[in-house]
Amino acid sequence: MSGDDDCRCRPLGFLLGLPFAFVALLLTLIGVVIWIVGFVVSLHFIAFIQFLLGLN
Image 1 (cartoon, rainbow, N blue to C red):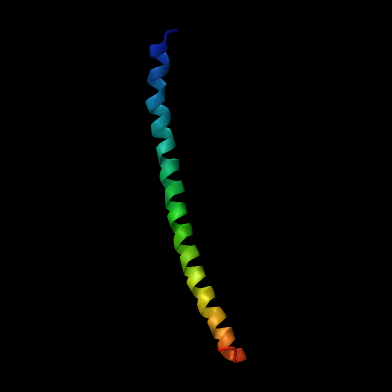
Image 2: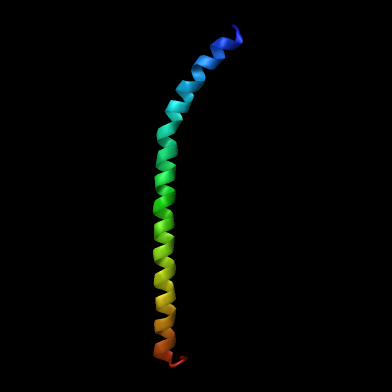
């Protein structure tokens, strides 16, 4: 076996891993959106609780 035989499999491995990389990227973007929405909601919730308790 020569070094040329090993190089032929590498593009196949890259192509097999590509869909998983896209799924991971998509899940990351969804997670960022959920995190931002949760952060904004928690800020409003804290302000609402402070308003109810008369801390403003």
